[in-house]
Length: 382
Image (tube, rainbow, N blue to C red; front, side, top):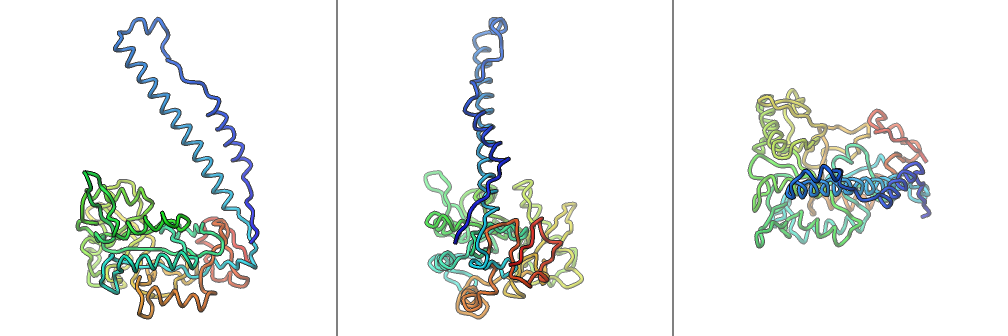
C-alpha cells in the first residue's frame, strides 16, 4: 500500500523558529546591577542568585515544552493527512465498533477472565487488526488507528482489585502485575504499536482496593491514559428506582470522583446489571443533581449486544442504549462469538482510513450518517 504524508508548512516554519530560539538563546543574567547587589547582605545575594537561576530553569523548561508540543503537533498533522489507496484498503468508517465489557481477572466465567484468557483476547485483537481507543475518541469519531485497522473500546465495571490495584514493595507503590491494568501495561510494552486504552466504571465503595489511597489510584490511571467514570454509588438496579434515588446514585459517585480529581471530565455512564431506569426516569441519566452537585453524561452502556455496534455518527446510534459485548468466549453474543462473526462478515466491521478528519465510507452508504454529529470531518465516498 502506497501512502505519503502532507506536511504542514506553516507549522514546520514555526517549529524551525522555535528550534533556532532554543539553540541561539543566551543564558539569563542576574537582573540586579552591581550597586544594588553591593547593598545586599551575602545571604540576600545568594537568595537573589538562586531565584534568578530558578527563573532561568523555568523559562528553559517552558521553551522545551513548546518545542516538544510543536513536534508532536507536526507529526499529528502529517498523520491526519495520510493518503491511501482506498480501493485497496476499503475503509468503512460507518461500520461496527465493538465496546467490550470486562469485570475482573478471575477464574469465574462468564463475567471474569483469567490472566491467560485476557492476554489471549488482547493477542487476538493485535493479530487481527483491532486497536484500542479511548471513550473520548470513540464519542468524537477521532479515529487515529492505522489504515485498514479496526478500533475497539475496552471497559471494566465495578472497580475490582483484580482489575487494578497497587501493591507495595519496599515502600514503593507498584501496579499489581496480575491485574488487568498490569497485563495491559505489559502487553503494550511487548507490542508497542497496539497501545493501551480502557475505561473503568467505579462504584462508591473503596475502588481498586489495595495499597495506596483512592486519590493515588485514580491519578495513576488518568496519568497513564486510562479513563474512569460512573457506575452508581451502590451498584443499584436503576430499573427499581425513582428519579430522586437515581440522581442520588449517580450524583454521589460523580461528586466523589470530582472531589478526588478536580476538573476531571466524565461523559460516559455504565448501567449496573445493564438495566436502564423506567422510561419516565431515563432522562436523569443525561443530567441531574444531588445535594447541589450537578452531573451530565452523553452516553450510557448496557450489558450485552442490545443493538448493533454502530459508531456515534450512525443514524441507528442510541446514546443511552449503547450495547457492549461481554468479554468472554463460549456463548452466543460474547466477544469470541463476534470475533468469528466479523471474520465471516468483514463488511460490517469498522475499517479505518487513518485520517480522523475524513469519514471514508463505501459509495451509497452516506444515508447512514448523522451529519450533525460530525466533528468538522468531511465525508468521503469511494
